[in-house]
Image (spheres, rainbow, N blue to C red):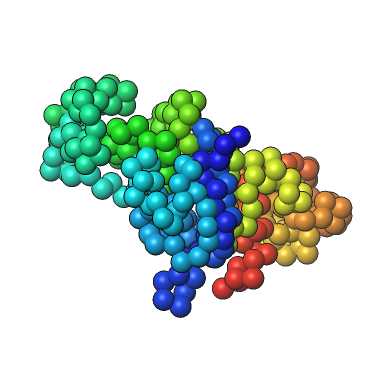
Length: 301
């Protein structure tokens, strides 16, 4: 498949601090790539380099077939970027914001395209409402409508569903999959594991380093973890479970504790030794990411 993003050694420094350290990333056209990692990991910086908003200190590659070093202005014109925080004008109406975005992007047949965007995003009945009066979910729709108004080939979304309710998140992801089905490529950063599982592939970054990339199944299998579920959430029991040498993570979940570790045999023997009610289960993405963080040289900071 043709790559919409193909970069090698992508690096960004601020002073003496390297915030993105030699990242290699490839995203196929028409696919959704989930970009995960803790706060301060370099996700936003990477996204801004890819769409031409930040100068690159190291690395080579292309976005949409355009050199990221020499053709950043052209990449900007073919990309849509939705920031973490709502960045449109709150003292303008929904319609005015979209008309302004259309002017910025030089959209032809502006009025028709704005009308079409309003209808597609379910915003027609809110056209004359001030953007500042919208709830988080409706602001999200407006921001996304502004991002796709100029029909970008690449959509870069920086934690777009933070602070919105589950229904709004579900509707948002249905739209994203609709865009991908039409051929748009999407790179979306998120902290939600259920959203990561909606992506065609995921990449996990921490401390500026890319730690893993692949489909969800590939990432989970590649971590080599085993997991178990133990009945009970008594604080003393949880403390004992966390102290077991075979346990890498232990998380209370309802009336049970979910455990994960790198050695299935050792985990089973340790649990049998405690004489607890337990059964094996599949590891999840959260297990993998906690394991990756702990294994990283900077994970103990």
